[in-house]
Image 1 (tube, rainbow, N blue to C red):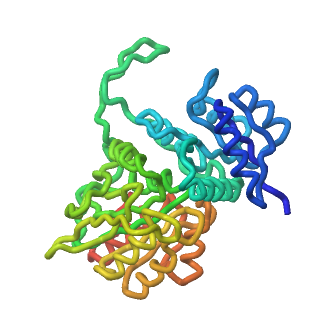
Image 2 (cartoon, rainbow, N blue to C red):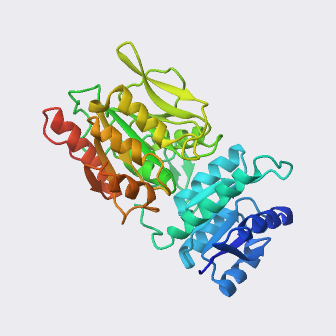
Length: 379
């Protein structure tokens, strides 16, 4: 069996050693080299041609983001970022995902032993997912430039660029079309590659879209930053879900990184419910938990969406949700970073449609308009 060749890039010798031990303990992967900085890593890439690179974000001489940009431009390779749980760390991590990194893990704590097995499983699972994604690099639509929220001086021309609204003015005619059935809900599940896939979909939705509940596999501490970044570029309001809050149209609710998100009811209203119960399919939050709650609460009012991700989390619950009356859309293989979760759902008969990523928002709005008795909303 050909092993996955991994290059570990980190300025800490202790981290390089720990990562190497974790990787070499697996039968299907090996550390072919380590590097303390991007300059040595550059030579190691040429020499060993790794299948996957684990890359520290904060390093001397050249930071991980600058090096990632060079990798993606000159020699596209699946990259797994190793991030610190800091304000800067979370912000830079999402920048790395926008630039083409497949996924990220938090930097391990060297003083813990309990939980190291789970951490090792997380790293190796994500290396396998990155390896599976190696032929699908650069498939996502490009991220548009964010308009400045304060006046800026162009460094080349010296001209002052006036401040613009943080949320872009939509270039389509979707706004103003009200959906007849405001009780409609959208439930979304995703994992590897999902942060950018979610961005692609949400940016296309009008501000009066039905409410959206999202479970993205992500560590605690990152989901609020993820929601805040999306909120800056979307017409709808995007936020991290809060237990007991009312679910409103024109809002998207992201499951916190260490809690399950469920759809609940309080009287006539839908609400977000959060749970600290045990991981499901080794995940908390779990897509299975979200979709199961949709099946139990109001399946005929739900559109389920399964996006890119490794494994099968949510597939069975999506199939059960469809049997109970939901309408389901799965991302197609060509546009998925990793086709695992959509493939498993499709295999169980859970999908009503299998759609490329850049068409999912349009198909969602067309379907909602159709069942609402209106002509299709164009985006």
